Amino acid sequence: MNRAFPRSFALLTALLALMASGLVIASTTPAGAQTAAHSVVPLLPRVSTSGDADGDTPGDATMYMRRLALTHDALRGAARQQAESALSRPKLAGEQTVCSQTLPLCVHYATTGVDAPAGAITPAVVLSTLEHIYATYKAAGYRMPESDGAMGGDSRTDIYLADVGRQGYYGYCAPEPRAGSTAHDTPAFCVLDNDFAPSEFGGRGTPISNLDVTAAHEFFHAVQFAYDATEDSWFMESTAVWVEDEVYTAINDNTQYLPYGPLGKPALSLDKNTTFGVYGGWIFFRWVTEHRPQAQGGLPTIIRSMWERAAATPGAPDAYSLQAIKGALKAAGLPIEKAFAQFAAANRNPAHTYSEGAANHYPLAKATKSYQVRSTGKRASGTARINHLAAATERFVPKGKRLKSKHTRLRLSLDMANKKLGPGAVVTVFLRNGATKVKTIKLSKTGKGAVTVPFSTKKVKRVELTMTNASTRMTCWVGGLFSCEGQPKDMHQVEKFSALARR
Image (cartoon, rainbow, N blue to C red):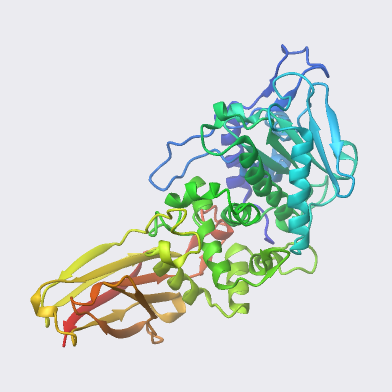
């Protein structure tokens, strides 16, 4: 993203994170006695699971390190020293290195102490995993992490194994901006937990499966930094969670985040930077790739197209997240207004609208309100206030003998925002035989539209009207929690609707 960081906000964020975490260097030795025989690993901010209703909690290590890396030059004195300590590469006890014979990758590990790899997590296993991930991303046409010069011993990308699990982390990657450079593409190094011990992470997954998805996720951050290390964190995290499931489709670790994204919180803006929400947002990119599955090297190309538009290197488009997504969708014949409305409607029936929805028990996005319609001629109406990149669904359920006739219909009328502001609407008829009929409602320039659908109690279980606000108008660089560190111009958009049963 081509812009100067809003220094006051970014600096305050970094300083608050430093103070809140009590950032120090974690060591196995007393102060003043650090030697090469002992590991020195940065102490990261503690993970919290007690955020607000949106899941707005601190604790993502990669985004924390990224923010610190991009702002620490503005710090002075003790704060600058603390930042540099936090951003330093781990110094491992009795450090050894194993490097790929074919790819620019090196794994660094301790040979003694708490950071030494243990159990199934051996340096050879980690290197093999990373070679597979590297080869997958390269075959798919992505940029690879940039050369770091002589950092870590040579120009290859370095991955360190350390006991970050005791701090609550699976791993992280940190960008390393070049001294004196204003470029937004940067090299990176990564840190992965040394054993992925169940005692640290509970019973979810095995050490190997946790290594697989963590390495795929974190290494994709290193790939992203080669495009633009200053890109919006929600876009970085959502696509990193998306890709881990593409590389290791049988693991499905990312389903744990679905309750925090559009499936669990349809009224929450897709691009709002909440800790768990940005993870849950991966489902949007899954929907997109299931509808535009054209692939290279086994990965759908449309997500790469988004990152190519977001690239900040000389001559690249340097679009911010939402602009890049909108451009890629349009080029694929899927305008964002249409895509987002269909996506939101699909989230009301995920077991049938996603390839893995039933097998992985995707949660059902909640309806806003339900209406029981018992007779013809009586109009039900209402108003929904919808946040940008969010949705509301109204349910209409036919009840009683008066609606048994096969000629019974439901007329839905809409008075939504001006079409320039991105409104969308989809009607879904759920039949008693388990089938569904889905129709996108055509809106006029002023946002008005109507549709008539079957509504007989004999055949119809319910009718749902899903309305969306796909506005992409932003006020950027104001320290906001949305795309371009901005504030959406069209929050709480008023959408009016009415429903009338008739024969």
